[in-house]
Amino acid sequence: MSTNADPATPAAGAAARPGTNPSSIPQPACEHELVLKVIPMPADCNPNGDIFGGWVMAQVDLAGSVLPARLAQGRIATVAVNQFIFKQPVRVGDILSFYATLTRIGNTSITVQVEVYAERFSAQGRYVKVTEASLTYVAIDDQGRPRQVPKAA
Image (cartoon, rainbow, N blue to C red; front, side):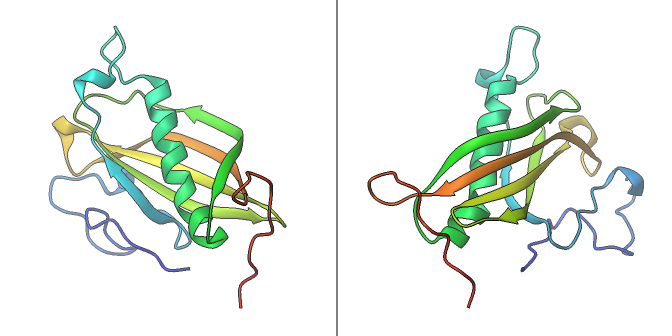
């Protein structure tokens, strides 16, 4: 699988930018792929000033669907959220990076692990894992019925 490295994330063994803490910079395994970057805005906040968990979940679902859609070569639907862990709050202005990896490919379903890292607005260049999730998608036909996932050639 190809890897699209986040330009802000140095490759393993590379020196971190000055003023960054190398242990806080995510080092996703080579099978993880950057699939989405997004910045939450004030309209996405709850009354406490943190980003709504539901907003984060929606972004994870979008990010999680990228690799299965590519593999399924057609329509897919989310059928399960197997695990969802909020590790840290997400704040307005954070730059969120979503990394995905395929963890299981079945006959009609595909399971994906998504990890979300925040580059804090006030501490750019430092990353903290804020969310991780496992989701399952199913390949569907035009009538919404499960169909076979194409086999790799």
